[in-house]
Amino acid sequence: MRKTKIVCTIGPATANRPALDRLVAAGMDVARLNFSHGRQAEHGEVIRVIRDAEPQWGRPITILQDLQGPKVRLGAFVGGRANLVTGERFTLTPKPVKGTASRSSISHPEFLSALQPGDQVWMDDGMIQLVVETVEDGEV
Image (cartoon, rainbow, N blue to C red; front, side, top):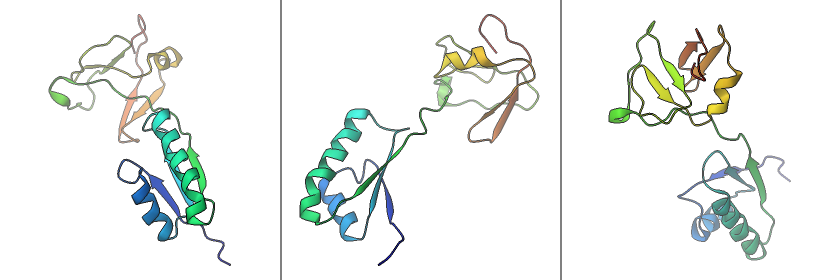
């Protein structure tokens, strides 16, 4: 009896019965749903499909819900992107603005109220580091 489990992340390409059939046939034991992406209704539908299909598959499939939660993300940028310059000021604002190389809105404005001068803010999975200089009128 094997103790290792095969975990498959279910996304747009695999969130349907034919794809799930293939994954189970290939040995999937655990269906991982990433709740940082997708909607609750979409995840609910995948769970329903899995539970409905288990009798045909002849075994239960464990469902793993990755509950990391939403990340704090920057808002949309003019032209789709901006190049930040080391040493230049960059303002995070709760206001819904189009981002530039010097200013951006964020997806969770309440995050800004927790920051103080001297705090470090890491973005892009740690690729960008900001240091809070000032907190004024809700902007950092």
